[in-house]
Amino acid sequence: MTVRPKKRLGQHFLVDENILGVVDRLAALAPDDVVLEVGPGLGILTRYLADRVRLVHAIELDRSLEAPLAAGLAGRDNVLLTFGDAVTLDLADLEPPPGKLVANLPYNIATPLVLESFARVRSIERWCVMVQREIADRFFAAPRTKAYGAVSVLVQLQARKAGFHPVSPSVFRPRPRVESALVAFVRTAEPPSDEVRSVVEAAFAHRRKTLANSIALAGRVPRDRVESELVSIGKPSGARAEELAPEEFVSIAQALR
Image (cartoon, rainbow, N blue to C red; front, side):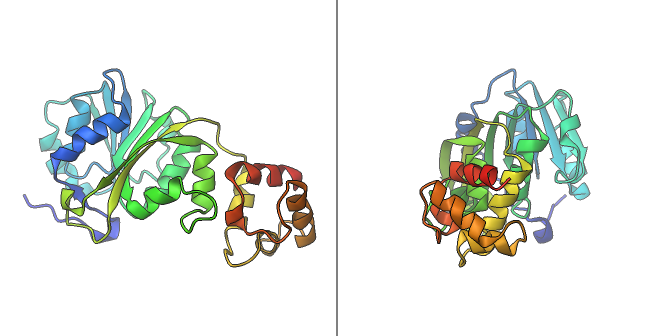
């Protein structure tokens, strides 16, 4: 049976097994691992993981993949396949709890899923995800660069980069029009508070405006108070959000509490 990828679901099926060795290395797979995979697609990565770890939780939204996945995973009883939306499923209820997220993530959910997985699945300590190159670059972009934004700050407050590998469009079907990358990172801290997250999101909501103006527009606190706190941490009162390092957003949020 021919399975047609669905554009509306951001599906680009992994078809080249040569990339799997890189996944193995960046994910630091071990025999006792419990792995969460989101978007198994045709099951190429799923089978590879199942042959190397203790258990795989595979979450798939597309019910039309049920038959090919069942056939491809036959005989591998260490794969628990769940059909549903990983963005809304309570992944914290998975048993046994996963320690790693290893996946070729559907393009349209990659960023929210990664961000939410930090808080929703506290058992995860390592991520190895295949995403658009643009998204991978954002995760660990440096301040004062075009790619640096709210996602960069929130990821870097919780994790350190452990690996990066560009991926050719030729490993997918259909071939995406953009470059992709494997990026691995390891949890280093608890998720930031709701206050910190709110300040970060407000600060980058209007990139062309100063940080103080952007936060004020969100209705949080007056502009002059934000400007005062910026000066107190050694920043110009007219600084823009991209000029602050991740930890400086924590300082600002604490001062504005």
